[in-house]
Length: 119
Image (cartoon, rainbow, N blue to C red; front, top):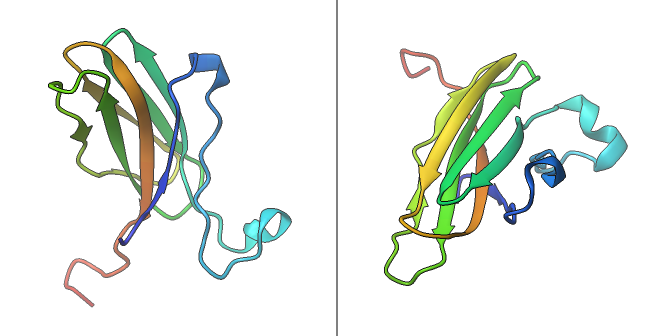
């Protein structure tokens, strides 16, 4: 797949960690400053509705998608469309189940680096 999925379990809003996407070939932890990437996302579940706020503090765009798994077997799971979070931009992603939410998470992917003319 062209993107890495960063899973989030459904937890109280205050307990949701910040997301970071690993860059292939980049040193871990302290060395990530070479090519920082990955919007910080907070996922909140309120009954059957899910919302995620993703803020991108970095100069490179991040394409984020919300994924929702529902508890009931007949309730459809959803994979939201990718939304571009540009530099210093916050985006809101929403999803829902008919009944209970089992899990919800946000996936990250680098935006296409080609220009508008394809070069």
